[in-house]
Image (cartoon, rainbow, N blue to C red):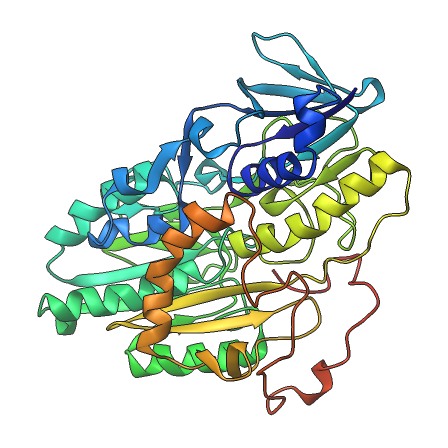
Length: 435
């Protein structure tokens, strides 16, 4: 009997469990293969929806479903807190449960926000004039604050990279512009976007497009700002080099780290708790029978749901190859795509990988119907439709029509980055590509 153990029942873990169940369906029925998923709670959150909760577009209950209902029948589910992975024993220790042994381990425990890592962030003013929207509690608490905000200095700040969904903070700024415009008070609200990056985004071509939109929407941009502390009482965000940004309302994206059990598992992760992972095969650097996927990894790809989906196609095959004693496929190229909500019923769409930055053109086919690096109402509708795609196609682990795991150049125009067309045999093995 082969035992496949998946840690985490978020986006990546759920996709992997369902894909592997489809692959080994007959073996699961005969008990030759078992697939077990472990997570610490029962609720699966549609994380892209958290962006819309503060603006009243979604209600918190609309983006949550029971984890068990999203896993294929035949997949075992264990609700428990993970204590640590003992790689030398091929065993995972749980709090209050018997340990679980495995032949293949897939770590899909995502990332978590750690606001306590920034001095003063959770002190005076927390959830009063300082909010996050990367947690259900934070997004829900921010909604009434935005509704009662009558004017002043709104600051959106990324404390440090990497973060989940790197475009979401920019989307929040664009939606805030739209929200306050609809309320008729935009002239009484100054909006400032503060980032540790040297531009609005990690990719140069995309940065140019997004900076233009920030300027057009009268959103100030402060770059290379690394927060050292927050004074909620004084309304001050202070950088390590003693620059100060004043605020009346601070929407922060706190630092992110990997799951808490990873530092307790010798050799599994880096100093931030992300699993040391081969960026092409998704195999752990610690041991051949351990793999990682999604936000849990340290691979230099965006921490986004689309990436987990594309990774899963490669990882499903590599789990099969590992169990069959075959060489692994170095097939993951860092493919990511995402809609960027820009407000006023419009959105951008970007598609890129480790080596090719976002390009203009059409997606997913040569004739579209979606436009790349260009605002459109159709992209906005695509962003809203993604919630249905997420529940009914992405999580069940189904392939998406016309969108392969490996990025396609179909429909793209090489006008912004003509040197980007050649594809490397394998992606970089260090953090040379910004998340």
